[in-house]
Length: 278
Length: 156
Image 1 (cartoon, rainbow over the protein chains, first blue to last red):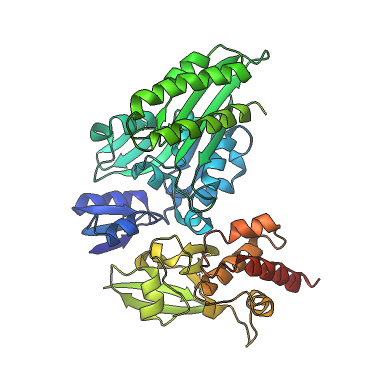
Image 2 (spheres, rainbow over the protein chains, first blue to last red):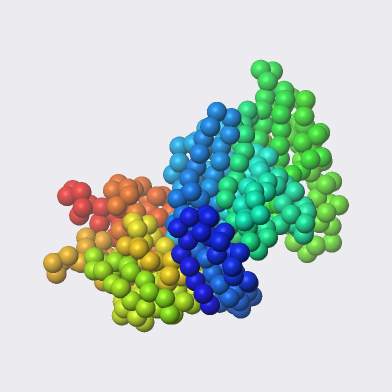
């Protein structure tokens, strides 16, 4: 195996173009396990974890851009994610353990594509765009499409996920997860919601996304459509939950874990929607 | 083989390693720091915890070549001038050690926690050591030891 510690994105792109069956390593928290279990056997490995450009969180007037190799700990420690964006911070705070958060990256969370990836529902609610670079140029994909159309738009062998970009939100983002225990738990279900309310507590903007309630993390559009324009109160939250149940019934019926998830999702749904108000 | 340079416990090393070695393998096999323990090998147990550039990591989830240019602290590097680190002393004084296998990683997680937050609450302590499993079920004594270490360090 040929290994290389990348110093700049350009240099990594050059390395990727030159070597076949090459994998990118950042935090290593997933890929090293996959290599040891012989699930993958790359001929070359290029490290992007020390590249400055990929470790930045940039804030402009309208957008926030998180570098692909930004760690969960970086997000937890950044004041940028207090206030309206707290849901993303909460999701990152609940990842693994201190050691995993110190190494694991947001880019890795996305491209590894686990249905349980903790940071994804929040990023879906923010309508995030992924920026991939290769020698062929720059390519942008909506995070939502990345999972829906993975075959067509998934990361290519010569690409690096350089950044995740989203517009500064109008509403408040909240996240909740259910794990089997507190630390190191892989989410059994997770849910994020971002809600923008007018003065009369009417919902003028809403995005909701779930993790582990389908083949991949996804927006719950039927619930969003149902709640849009309504007043956010106990009754509408319960009605929204009923819409969610119908949607997940269609997706997950027959799965052995579904009767449990169907009940368990209730609390998460109420928690995130109550959270956006308080 | 690939050449790397790294600092371990304040001493610089320049060595040639196998490309597929993890940091834990380099530390134990190439450099002899056998205080670093391998438990699960998949980042769950924290026995292989070391401090890398000021932050705790599972050394079983870092490739050796990724540590090029890094500053590593293992359990062997905590004592100074023949004196144990206050965290080590507190673990002994409280009796927080049973079989001992988790202790090097546990002590390093506590060291990193206190370096970042000299006065952690009970909850922050439990969160700080949540990536280190002790199967002798000794967590209460360990938490007690962290409170004692905090008192040793703050001189109260």
